Image 1 (tube, rainbow, N blue to C red):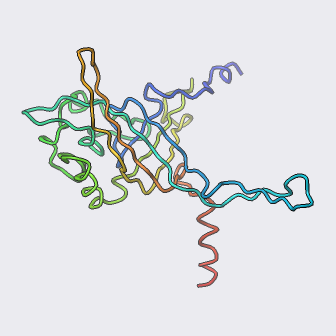
Image 2: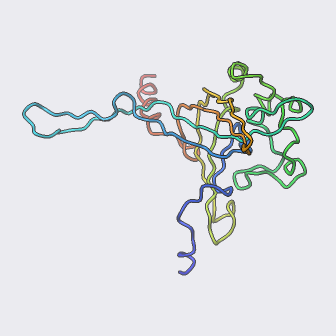
Length: 233
C-alpha cells in the first residue's frame, strides 16, 4: 500500500523523462520544445439558436482540425576545420547504437560521449542518417526536405514515467509515445545578436505536422472517413 504513495503522478518535463526524436533519432542539444496542438477548423464551435429561444439549443463542432506545430530551440555548437555547425545539420543524426524508447540516449559508447563527433556538415556525409547535414540555408533545407522520405522527417515524443518499481522500460514501467505525422520544416530562425555577455546561442526551427497518433493508435476520424468508401467498394 505504501508503494502506491511513492509512485510519481506529476509528470517531469526535463531530465530525460520527455524525449523528442526526429526521423527516429533523438533531437540532440535541444533546450526547449514548444508544442501547439491542432485547432478545430473554421470558427470551431457554432451555436444553433432559433429566434424564439433565449439560449442555444445545440452546439455544433467540426470533426476536423488544422495542422499542429512543434518549435525547437536548439543550442548552436562550434564547427570544425573552418566549417560552421548549423542546428539543422544534426536533425535525424544517429547518436550511436543502443537507442530505444526505454534508452533514448543510446548506448554508452565513445561516439555518444563526444559532442563533436559528426555534428557538422563537414563530417556528416550520409544523407540517409542526417538529411539536412551540410545544407547552406533555409532554401537548401526545403529542397532536401522535398527529396526526403516522410518517415525520416517524423517527430515522436517519448515520455518515460517515474516509478519505484524500476527504471522506465521494464515490465511495469513502459514508456508511451505521441507520433506527429506529415512533418515539414516551415521556418528557421538562424539570425543572432552577439554581445560581450552572450554565452549560449540558440536557434529556432519550426515544424508543422498534419495529425497525431498515440502509441501508434489513430483517431476514430480515419475509421469514419474510410468506412463509407469500403462499403461502396
